[in-house]
Image (cartoon, rainbow, N blue to C red; front, side, top):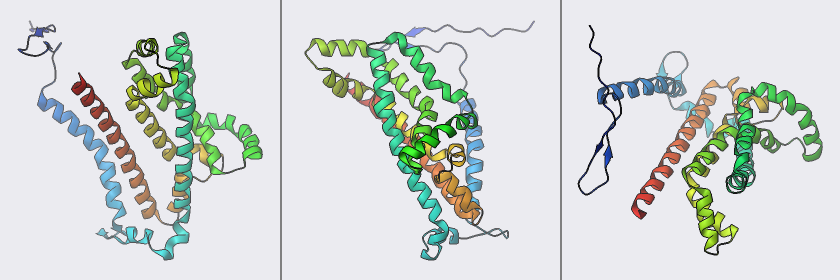
Length: 291
């Protein structure tokens, strides 16, 4: 008969001079197993990035490495060739600013008001914000085309108008971090305590709620920027020039430079994730010190 390993229940281990430490429940993976799993996952992500970085240094098909592709970006003689990339990058950054403003001025107040005054509508707001992620972007474009015919007549056909469509697509990515931050704190209790001490709603929002929601707001803004920089389908179907559509255009003439900008965009997204983690770590450190 095969022996069945026993599962130890969670036990509380007293610590002298400190809080009680709760033991692990079940069989936890060993450190070696965790290192192996993390190494395999890192390898899966690292191999394509290393291959892309190596491709940016290649000279033709002979395998030689060179910096000529990087030097060509800053060469004034190639300014006309690479101008679409810089124009598209500028348009994407402008769209990112407008989309982040939509998140901060529309989505964030809606979530705060719902959490404070209308908690029963939280599920409705969550459903509305998460619907865009369940619908393919190509299907959304079919509905956006007649809308953007009116938008082009009213606001023009500038690339910045794409922020209205990308703002809808980025709702699920911006909603979840703010919702998690709201769940982590008791918004109603904090607001009522501040109001009982004579604070106005502006003071409650600006000095109490927003500092506690800083990590969620930062994550929502950075994820929104990442979505904007990586969006191609909407810009392509709506005939707008953005960073991704410009990369596809330049790739037809110089694939090396397109790979350089793609690698830079990936590194920028990774940097944003690191900043999100640092903001959360500093927030936890500040909380522990104040406690």
